[in-house]
Image (tube, rainbow over all chains, first blue to last red; front, top):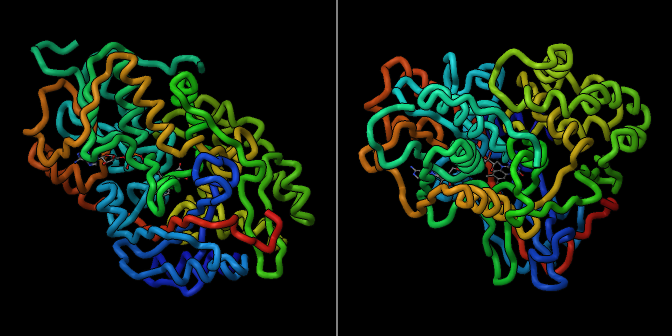
Length: 166
Length: 307
Ligand SMILES: Cc1cc2nc3c(=O)[nH]c(=O)nc-3n(C[C@H](O)[C@H](O)[C@H](O)COP(=O)(O)OP(=O)(O)OC[C@H]3O[C@@H](n4cnc5c(N)ncnc54)[C@H](O)[C@@H]3O)c2cc1C
């Protein structure tokens, strides 16, 4: 816990911890379609300051090796993405921020600006529907759904309701 | 209905999960919708590619889908009929310690609590009510600020969610419980002492104990494919390889929804926005970035801890 708190605090303050908090998964363990028979895939990421181009590969791999000696010998290939690669890959990841903006007390409910509807912009007929709007980052589509609901009400006079689960 | 002939009723720019959801919600109401994507393929944070070696496929961004599973809107769609299958790993998450022990998050609330020894009761106290009432409150939590349908339950979530993760962790004594909690909260991409980091941790733990933390079979791209296939089956149109730099490039429409962040909206539509709104968007703040590695491996990672 202390290690995670320290790592996250110093990263937000602009530093690159020697022992970053690493989030890791091995999808191939549960989905054999991810790799040729008998082989595996894994991914890991750590947080870095917005816009950072520091190479964290060794630090992440050292962290994994710490808890799984022998890990490095099993690597057949690797692909890395720093924050600049992230933004190039998806222009929504500004400076490598994958949540479309900070989620703190001020921006949790007022994303992206304090307005009657967060989805409506100041221009008629133009709406925001990304994870920069409530309820924020993650794959759930609820920002898009609520933005569409708002637009349909304003522009087309349609009151959409959630259909019952299929 | 607005009057005047337009090319489409609505245009959505950006085909991430939110763009796809917006496009589907409008096409379901029989509006004509065009979904535009700047890159070659749709999906945004839902793409899966051969990043390392031939035959190894990797989720470029999102990989684990408790939120897709819990989403009231996605739940209402026939995504299984459009090819989406979830796979549920038996153990959603584990946090190893150097001595070979670990903190483990299991699908069951009671089972997870039991492994936390001294913190068994504290863990249950934090989550039991919320896990039990999740189906009722999910709609309110995954929504903009509004009057909730279940005010008491929402208040329960709210006061827990709005405290900082560091102060919440004071409920726990064992390193296992503290690590599990901090690991979840770190997903908020900001220092754990910030207020509201608990909201993310709570949602992740509640979803682990309700629906689970599934992967999409064949990679996250399967979610985008299922959404797109359903959208097209309703009559929706998709155009890829169309990067939008300005409003002038777009066909005409009554409504335009952007699946992009404030800074990009300023570039694309800045001239049509009021100066107050522009000022607000300019003050929108972005958070920490991520550094990601994907590996192709000869064998699974040999963790000392069993999970
Ligand atoms: C490494 C990483 C891991 C993640 N892990 C998870 C996870 O495990 N689970 C989870 O739930 N979430 C995860 N996320 C977060 C999740 O991917 C995002 O929150 C989600 O994709 C946001 O959806 P969106 O629809 O708002 O935007 P996006 O998915 O970012 O989609 C935006 C789309 O708009 C397009 N676009 C942008 N600008 C233009 C333009 N001018 N013209 C045309 N098209 C444009 C982009 O190309 C992109 O396709 C992860 C993200 C990353 C990067």
